[in-house]
Image 1 (tube, rainbow, N blue to C red):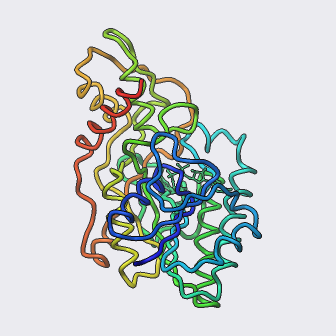
Image 2: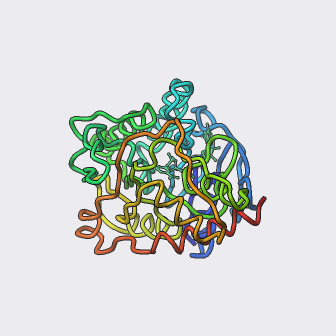
Length: 316
Ligand code: NAD
């Protein structure tokens, strides 16, 4: 039986990943500051611990694992990342976790997965909302638009340095806006799909849904099941360079909102208001993943949003 460790296993993606690994027959240990918010964990063992502490990380790694999935990070949606108020914590907390993990695994043969982000791409390549450049090789010269993106880029380079100098066996994915049930939908750390689903679910006929910015900013959103499929395919590959895992179906935020309004069957309009929006345009460039893994996500956004909307609606 293979043994997997999921760091951040109480988070949105980590909790889903634990389930998938269990379904594949793994023995799974999960670590997080907290249990999953909307679910009970499927992990064989769930350790509540702070991964910023190196002694804690060392203790966890005294057990042997075939695979380690490093998803723990201090993160949130635009309302958390782009206000500037959380920058120091974002940089310090996530970098500390990654330094601890890299250092502890440096002489090990364990295969490590690291979750980076589309937020590493340079701001100036994402000014034209209809034509953003998020090809993997456009990452440098670097200029992410948030400290969250800078930390992710630092940690990508941290892990690839450990691979170069100590033989660390690492796979790195740049996730693009992962969404689905069992994720945060309220409280300030929620992302656009869950926030919009909540606002629409709470609205009554005649209401206007508030959308940050002009609503013409573009993004692509990847349904959680395809994110897990991408992680699986990357981990079983020999691809050592950072690779996008995202959808190539690009929409404006207003289009996404209209989609959810139509799914709800309600008579609602949109009101665009001031708010943190991040870059003007962003969409996963899937040429590299298609050529290296012979696969790319293709689940329609509308189907995923329907599942998310129904789940958020059921929670309210
Ligand atoms: P999440 O916030 O739900 O999960 C992260 C988990 O890490 C949380 O449960 C949190 O409690 C835990 N954590 C934070 N600090 C910790 C610490 N000091 N010790 C132990 N645990 C700690 O986020 P998610 O959406 O599941 O994302 C998982 C990973 O994927 C993150 O690294 C994130 O940056 C990355 N990512 C996610 C997306 C997305 O759209 N969800 C996009 C790009 C990258």
